[in-house]
Image 1 (cartoon, rainbow, N blue to C red):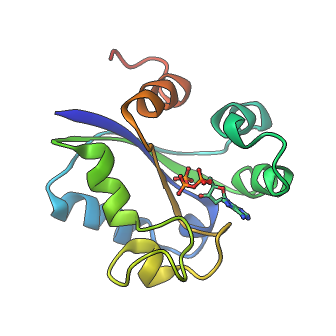
Image 2 (cartoon, helix red, strand yellow):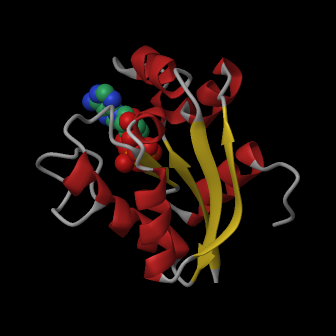
Length: 137
Ligand code: ATP
């Protein structure tokens, strides 16, 4: 069994899609281990998106992720990392994300793509420590 960090980004919360995202996670058979609604400060945003530092969209991405509450969740199950990435769909909601995926069904623009899910075992480990420091591995 594996753990992954799932975020419902400010656009998903603002648009009332929390229930839809959580419902799909549950119906897939994945388990919610931790979940809360929180504001993201600039420091956490910079650490979370450190790999994008220097890219043209970095500043706007930080502004977006700190613009309103997000849902942060620890999701567990067999292949949880790739299982959630599949539910989410490709990064770009049009062109990459398949219909039937969260981004494919509800997204239009690459920045406002509703959700985040860790992309590897290493990222999951790093991100879970960052968002849920009190959790044991
Ligand atoms: P996430 O890490 O949020 O799950 P991802 O792994 O699918 O997304 P990344 O390439 O890591 O995608 O990009 C991180 C986030 O940065 C994307 O989810 C999106 O919100 C934003 N982003 C990526 N590319 C662009 C872009 N060209 N313009 C604006 N925002 C972008």
